Amino acid sequence: MNDILPIVLSILGALVVVGAFIPVLLKTRKNINRYPGTRDANDPEVRPGGGTATADADQATARPAERTAPAERDLEGVDTTVPDDAAGLETIPVETPLPVAGRLARLRERLVRSNNVMGKGLLALLSSDKIDENVWDEVEETLLLADLGTEPTMQLVDALRERVKVLGTRSPEHVKAMLREELVKVVDPAMDRSLNVQRHDGKPAVMMVVGVNGVGKTTTVGKLARVLVAEDKDVILGAADTFRAAAAEQLATWGQRVGVPTVKSDIDGADPASVAYEAVKAGIDQEVDVVMIDTAGRLQNKVGLMDELGKVKRVVEKLADVDEVLLVLDATTGQNGLNQARVFSEVVNITGIVLTKLDGTAKGGIVVAIQKTLGVPVKLIGLGEGADDLAPFDAEGFVDALLN
Image (cartoon, rainbow, N blue to C red):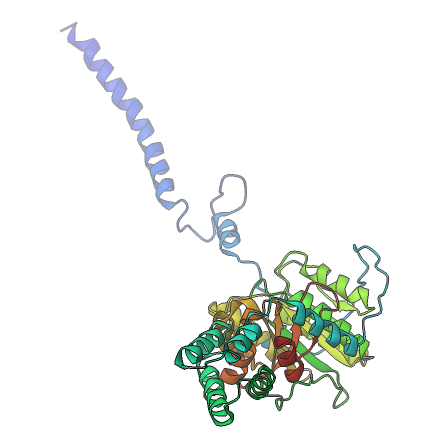
């Protein structure tokens, strides 16, 4: 009996100790179930590190305020300033651009000197002693490889076949004259290739320059600014390409070279529509002749980016009409350039084409294909990297250069 009593007392003591801790364990378990879930409003629990669970939850779910697109808010009273183009840039002396006439002659000379596969090939075929079906097949192939397009190619070949058959001539001079006449017809000199750069209704003309990545839009805007300055136009540039690193600085540098100011944002990724809006407002306030807006490059199959481009145009039109929308195309891309033109024309109503890298003249037929498909004229062409290597497109001059 004496041996059992110590054991019983030990068991009772253990039960007393356990009983004392049960409320603590239950309370702790209750807290785990409630944390970090719902709790009494009058007794908010504290999270580690300070602050109530409510405050931390609100902070975790908060989102930074999104930039409100100008198209979706009241744009009245926007403070527009033209920043100092020299800020952070090397001082560049103002240049005197070449006159337009001299630029045209220079481009024609370059095109004549280039490896003109299209013109030389056609003349060689049509000047052969015997023009049979094989020759006409080769003529068709040459034109198609030059990206002339199926319909214009058939139109040109049918016209040439008929004239050669009727006249029965083999003289190289006569063949060249006929080829020139028919090429001029398909290039269509009757299309209006003038740029709408005249002030109207007390406001400047507004021009947007669009295109896919890497075709040289910013460079084209800079070169075109030189063309306009050579025509004694007052110009303001708008750097609405806010996503490409250093795009605004590149455009401002082009502007500095001819004494043209640039409206740009110091914030990377700023809303391009806002920048475009401010550029147009600055143009109105300063009574300039032309506002040129450089836009970010975008793939034609990216719906979101194309929608954004449409928004830029709508926002600008709150202040002034967009008189020109120029699509910049790389002539060497051929039929892919035609696909790009179709999509862009649906989004922003293209009014003209700028063809760059046209010194790859084997692809010169894209001029005809685009005009025939869209009814939109090629207004400017570029043949090189020089500052003055951009000029108004002239149908007869282009054909003459192709045929040397």
